[in-house]
Length: 463
Picture 1: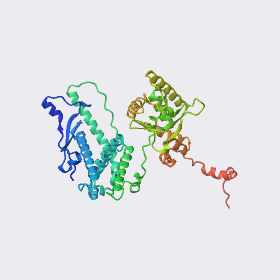
Picture 2: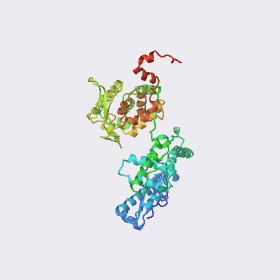
Picture 3: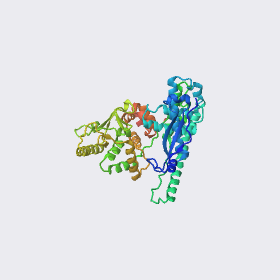
Picture 4: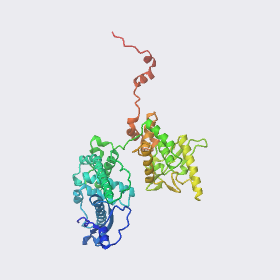
């Protein structure tokens, strides 16, 4: 069965101008409204409630990238719906195994993403569509059955180049838009455009993982016999799928902590200090509740119990893994700041007629947790102000691990505090930051057995 295709987009703004009608309301006034139309073949109409065509109104900044991408997403979504309907119906029009194997990998990956809509979170779908862009631009035209490990590696290696190319294109479009507004008489002063950001190893690893998951799906459905993105098929450079490690060095960490201590009492100060002093993941810090904090005022050590994580704006009672449920000690200063912030929050809630409960988020307004996007926005603004632009919240987790290990803390202890499932993972991840202990090892070994032999060292006699 032929895949569904969009007709030429219909410019709704031009049509409204011809009629003398008002433009449709939109969030961004720079966009143009278009109507996308997919005409459904007669044999497929029963899968869409008998409709002869499907329409969708979209708002695009330009035709070349934005509108084209939205039209492609509309096609992919409706083709995925048709595919699922055909599979459920057992129709003869459903694709056979050979047709799936011959399908371009980019199309197969797009169908994989659309099939997951509704079964996974919205944030996951948004991320997977981002990874899909890299896949389609690099290896999207290769048939599924012909995909090789070398192609998968090339896809990962292309990520920085494609990211830079797209970022420069977006920057050029913004500059052109500013020039157009200037010509049209909009002479208000505008902030300088932010420098471009290019994807690095972190995105490469995510794209590689995405390709691996798509191929796992193809193997499970018996469209191909093996997953060429598995580690054993990749060259040595790609076998270790390590995340980005970007800790602060010890002198930088000291300066960063001083800047954090000068923040006024509030959510930002509490969040930064908790991230810095505990090594928690950002989603775990944002999910902390009042009842999970032990202040240490009663003679016990100050600590926080980690039993939840923030998922799609909600606190969910599970973390990344079972080992992520843990108790982490707090230093006296951080515990004091968190305790004072909770008391301040209690006062603010009382003024609003609300009561602070054990289930109230430590970081958040009223009874709702602090949204991650809002936190990240405030974080970026603050780190730019103090001269640490580009530092991620997650970098404080790596800083906690690397400095503790550099000062001789036991790897197993650090692994438990980080919530890793296995200490070997912690060791493999941070091995470059663990100081060497081989200096003097030989003398320590022999000296522990025969100390007098080491103490009375002399040149061996010759005969």
